[in-house]
Length: 169
Image 1 (cartoon, rainbow, N blue to C red):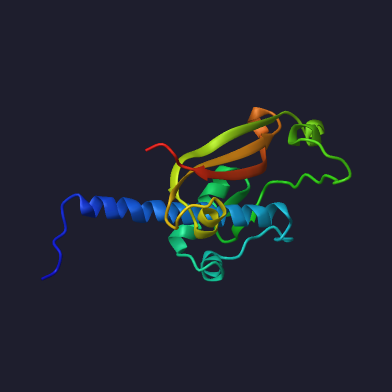
Image 2: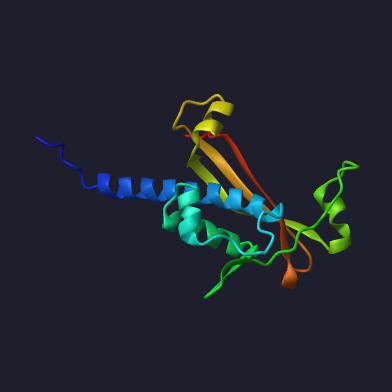
């Protein structure tokens, strides 16, 4: 006889699927952000959603969420009939001296940071392994984005995702 589902099991399972898709979207956004900021799309146009989904073994919904995250950061715009285009400029900097982000970008304006996401997520396998946690363990995830320039024209200049053991229960 099949196991009976409890009324609370369905919403919990749906929430878990949404959280996993959101985690995957953040991971894909991180990868695409890195590619954008390192000039991987020289003509400034990202591949179509179908191609991104196939290349990264993701669903189109996950790709759309990732692109929406990048759009929210001001890195890309979605243009009908054109696709997803890069709108943020790269800030070249040399590696001849060690300095912080604010010092590197001083000539471009004020640098501010914003915490975009903060909360527990299921650690991807490599993250869990690196932190010495069991597979499927929760970690505290902090996504930050740095912006340069005046508030009206601020441009995303960097982003970081930090995962740390989630000790609060």
